[in-house]
Image (cartoon, rainbow, N blue to C red; front, side, top):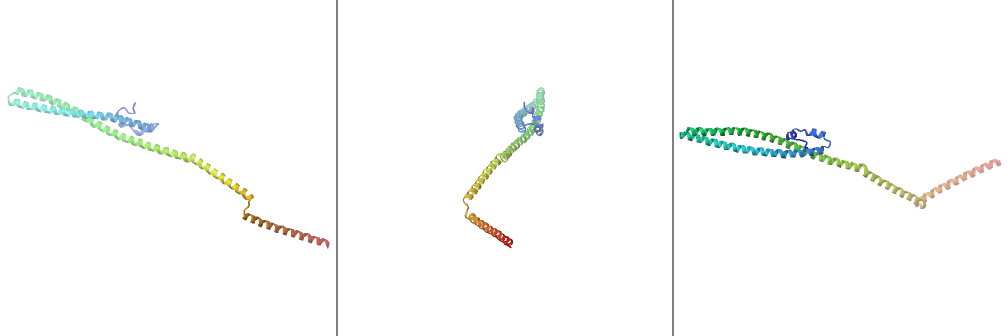
Length: 229
């Protein structure tokens, strides 16, 4: 069963209310569009039948009018010829055609009114269909944009940072390994600058050691002389 049962229901329906209540707005829009398209096909077919009927009524009215004029002319001829009885009979036929014309006029008015109302409803339905299609396109674009954002967020918040972090850790481990190797190499094979630095340190230590020995020796000598006195 469709969402709408008659074109009047479609025209008077509130699309915002329908979409607000829908669990899946995109699916609802597709169903609404399908129902509207089917309604348009049906009502355009009805309009075509109305227009065809209108043309047929107009043709029939013209035939009646022509026939009525013919009986009018015949009545005048009969009077000219002194046949009042024939004139009366001709006017009677004209009266019948006039009554038929009146009935057709009333029917034509009803058909014209139906055409006007149906045309207006079709225009309203076409406007609603255009609105529904615009909403469908907007929803499609919004969903595509949302999917893109989710994919970007998934990549930026998950796999890519982990991969980058792993690469940094690998680089840090390699740097640490290189530094360790440099330290080991430096311990076994000191550079020229390191060797001269070590010599300078050794010389300073030797001088300090000699000074310390001299002070100690002087202290011992002074102490011995005091005891001798």
